[in-house]
Image 1 (cartoon, rainbow, N blue to C red):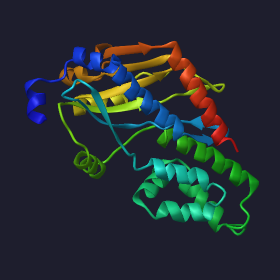
Image 2 (image 1 turned 60 degrees about the vertical axis):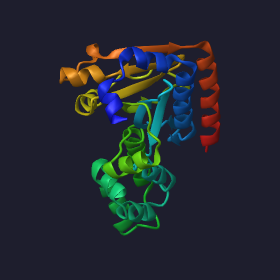
Image 3 (image 1 turned 135 degrees about the horizontal axis):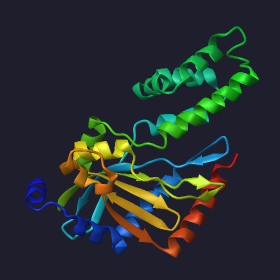
Image 4 (image 1 turned 45 degrees about the vertical axis):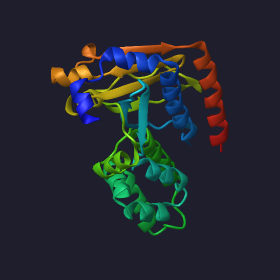
Length: 261
């Protein structure tokens, strides 16, 4: 696969053809469906997670998107489910590297949980103000760490070993999942500075952006050759369909219902 890629790197035209094929659209639709299915509702807000991984263009020309699990997302999900048990939540977070990462990188979370579980009135009766503040901090935690995708070398090596790689290597990818405004899908967000810097470093960081009536795929590989972040140099592939809008309106309604308290 490495030799084939070096001899004949995937061109933007080939990528565009693969993305816009029936199989390519189905593959990308499945990614967004998975994100919706794994959503969380926090303080009445439906939050869909980012997904990501590595990709290839198979020998048959099909786009293959290999999903890598995010090590932080399961911990964020536990935080949301344990918000009424501050003492147990603190113990849970302190018991793993991912939990300690969130305690360190979410402003106020560690200090608040410590206060709630060590003050004279705790852990049996945290104050209403403390619980309201914890709701706000957890909402920020979910917004910051559930709406982003990360991986690490161990996960990458495990997924590489589990995957049957063929054809030509395309690069890393991630999605910008559906976002809601007043409970309806709203326009997706274009690649961030971090996305572009990742592309410069990694050679590619395909950014697949959900839109209410389709999706946009940003081919960021030109930024690697450029050596700097410049969105105007990215290649854009657009897909639009009225069926897409109807399909995901129904999917999001189901997610909202299943996440309702």
